[in-house]
Image (cartoon, rainbow, N blue to C red; front, side, top):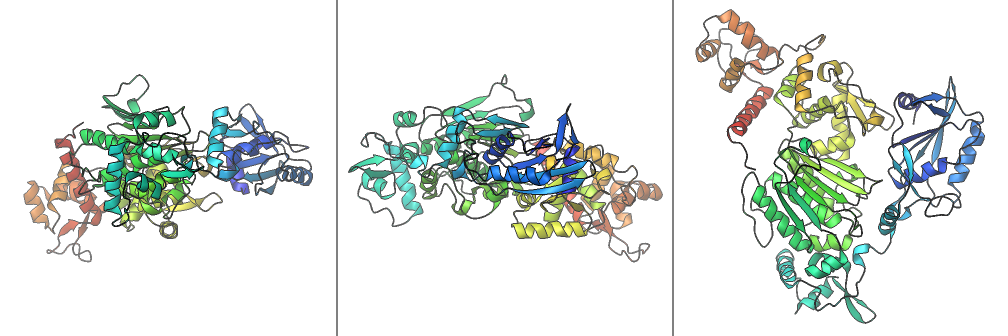
Amino acid sequence: MDRKELQARLQSIEWSDIEFKEAAWAAPKDSLETVSAFANTAGGHLVFGVKQANGSFTITGVTNADEVQNTFLGWVRDQNKISVFLPINGSVHSLAEGTVLAFYVPEAKRNEKPAFIDRTPHKAYIRRGGRDDTCTRDELLRFIRDASNIRYDAEPLDVDTSRCFDEPSVRWYRTRFAASNPGKDTAADDTTFLRNWGFLVEQGGVLRPTRAAILVLGSGEYVRQVLPRMVTDVQFYRNASADYDSAVRWADRLTVEDNLIKAWQSIVDFYFRHSERPFAVDASTLRRDDDPPDYISFREAAINLLIHQDFGDTTRVPVIRFFRDQTEFFNPGDAFGSREQLLDPGDKEVRNPSIVNAFRRIGLSDQGGTGVRAIFDGWRRLGYMPPEIENHKAEKSFRLRLRKEKLITEAQLLAQASLGVSLSGQEADVFAYLTRKGQIDIADVKALTGLSGTDARQLVQRLTVQALLVAQGETGNVFGLAEHLRPHFLAGKPSVPPENQHVAAELGGEKSTDQATDQAGVGAGELDRSLDRLSDMQWRLIGFADVPRSMAEFMTHTGFKHRPHFVTTHLEPLLAGGVLRLTLPDKPRSPKQQYVLTDVGVKLKAMHGQAGVATEQEPEQ
């Protein structure tokens, strides 16, 4: 944490990733509770020399900075005081008001949690809001399950192997396995097949099914013994997500208390019944022939929910909620990787490796950690805002939202055209996101574009050179809309510090973007915001100008007789706004002059046509 970031945080409020302590004369002993809490959640900054009073923070300074720092660092390296070694380093800031010490506490590794103090596991803490809360019994058990070297789903169970499997599920699985792995199913019977592929393991000379075997292929009664809660709860609502509360009743519901294969089959059937565009699914693969982007994103999200949940957590149920404007997936159990890591190619550490491998063998879980990428790729192809991920380390839960909200609106295209710079499709997507949120990080850029980390940084660098965004904070991963553009694109919206991005209210939405576009014409300075929205007459011109047209053709097409009024009111704003261009720009008064759509104009025409079709054909619910 550098001085600029520290001063910015002092002007905000205390959040889950920063804790202030007065520590005027000595390192406070309760600071180890904060170290435990940060280590068990997502890491954070611990700052000494700041006093909290009446909701505000005042720099009081640390009197003997060297002694306080050495004492604190000695504590965090003493396993009698904290159970895990953490690479904590401090920085000293000499401010006018006094000396401030800042330490960054990283998140502990999966197998090191829970981090506890005083050699007492019950003194483990998690960070919740601005508090360090003692872990409950259930929270401790979640940490312990995830930390075990023997994975929960691989444990053998003492049950009757002749009765515990569901024969139709095993038959379906073997058929799908043979189709996905030609020549690899050489087993003469089901028992041999299940043993060959790890569903049955030998223990004390006796074959035992693993917990994964029961969860994937078990008969209903055995599944319910292993998992005394629903496998998933799927709910369909006719209203928007904003109208949801506990009193709102679903229009249709599916509850599953059977194995994961049957759960997946039931979820696909449910999706089929409520799809906006009816389709057929291959019964043997549960895949569509054409696999459109919306189904790909849903399929991967639903499979991830099934196979990555914490099956040892019997207090919470995985839920899929369909709303008119989004689909939401909730899972007990957080992802072990960060959001950015989830978007990177390559295998990831997973909670249930045996179950994941069982699904991969039949093509229902993609290799190399590409499932989350497929979710984002499908949603990107539809032109929607990127899926939202909430990987809650304290609650150990995972939420994914697929919002049916277009990333680029007509108003944003008009706003981009006024910049006077040429943006590629990916750059335009990043800029549109910036005009909604005010800032962006590298993970957001990867989510928006599908680029690798290196290519995402190069794209950000190009936008920086064009003075469209600026770096924020000390990490080099967060960027904000350039200050000279904020009044035009974020009018009336607060400038959110990068450190508080995770708690700031969303700055986007189509309505607010339109409002920003409307207000941007006031005091626009170096920007020409002569075109805020299109009139019906201008839409007629756009629909006619997909090939070069002369002034006479425009006048005839629209029925206008008064040329000066037509040019001033309708044509010139389209030219100034970057929607139309001259075919002979060096000879504006040439009698051979014609007018044609720019790239932005072509996009606007396509978007307007799609909106018209959507209005005429209301989707089925």
